Length: 88
Image (cartoon, rainbow, N blue to C red):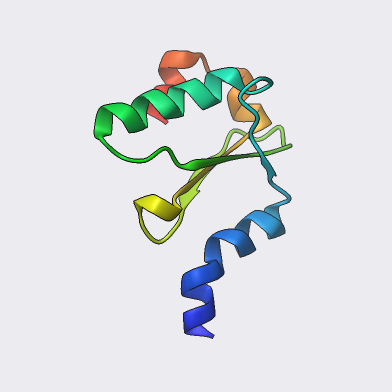
């Protein structure tokens, strides 16, 4: 069970939360902010997901930089400007 949660915890959390993959075209600001921050930090760009919810929330998961996932709610993306989103 521990081994399974180590390798699949990101997929489990995303499935439970009903997250969908972010699209560069429709989620352009979220996509480019994350891409720029990853580039500046010298890390690979994480997979991006969005949860359809009005709450302002975000989380990151994954066992290492190559398997990283960043997930944000639509409420967060609607309410924050680019600078505030970079801070999150």
